[in-house]
Image (tube, rainbow, N blue to C red; front, side):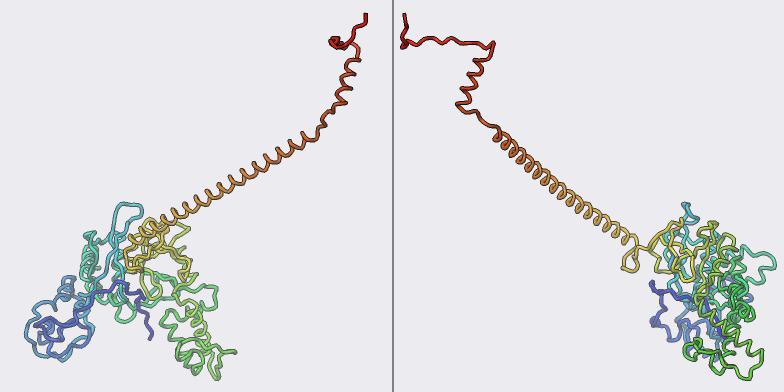
Length: 493
């Protein structure tokens, strides 16, 4: 039977605390917490009694869980007791004791949007605890629990378990108290994932695998789990998926069909569908067996085409059917906080809890717009579009990287302004030189034209001057000048 575990693939950019490799002085080897069988001569006080420690989920209270988690840290210097032959390998106490080393980092955000209130959300730095982190973050955003003080930088499992337990104890009344202890006993196992099985027929339908109980915790907290791994009713694989009902049954049908076809349906190494030129050979099979093979081929094609566990039909279905509010969203074997807004243009957002963005104050939500995230955008607490500063990648805080980027942009702008001013100055100088050259050329042309016009006018000669004078004397009305006799002339008597 194939199971789907909600363990995401978040990179471990912020290393979680590791348990102590070597026991301190005075402590016998084998006393550290473990979920496997104990080593001989253990000094843990939990196994000091002559009987095996059994988990009691029916009567255990939050205080009992905390006590079990801290029990191994007391009286570790005792002498080794007698050996215990058997011990539960996955008891609640063992998981709670191991959770002592589970610490998650916190990030302050503004919530509700456009308010002056700050809340701390939990970031995820390792694989596994996405279900518990999603549960607590929804309760934080709803105002049901609160992490204090605001300058706190990290939180442990015990702290979160106590917050959830106190909330449920104050919330439960009457018959609801009967399932409270059983639900609280599942909190430690939620650190390592949650085995759930999505049902193809409904976006709110899930089946619990194994012992179960984790879904009950979400139910008691009033948190709805949703998924968008739905087939279009008009598609060819829709009826086949309905007959398979859920993911587990679909995988069983594929394995059965591969067995009926003697391995013709699925590659043994990769699990991919064989690409045959013709139809799958089904000799001597009943109609029911042929239907199983036909459904298996369609189901496998659907799974390969929608490996992100979200379809466009499912995305549109969530956008149109969900009421505004907070949900636990199952996708890519991971649980995250889903926010349905009342805005029709951008209705769905997921809370960014990857510890890579712990130092990115403007990255709070990511829009859910397609099945592969290609069209998604990061937004801040007020749903204004933002971009990452890249502080975590470059080894510095996002604020420092942002200031450096702004300074670089400012310097680049100043350099561009200086270059532009120099270019404009050079162009003005070139233009002034051109204007001066044209003026000088025009002046020279005018001087040359004036000289040529003066040289073209004829000058009067001596003979012409005398004739001009006689003509003036002969003209009527002209003034006659009497000539005086010279002394040398003879005067006749």
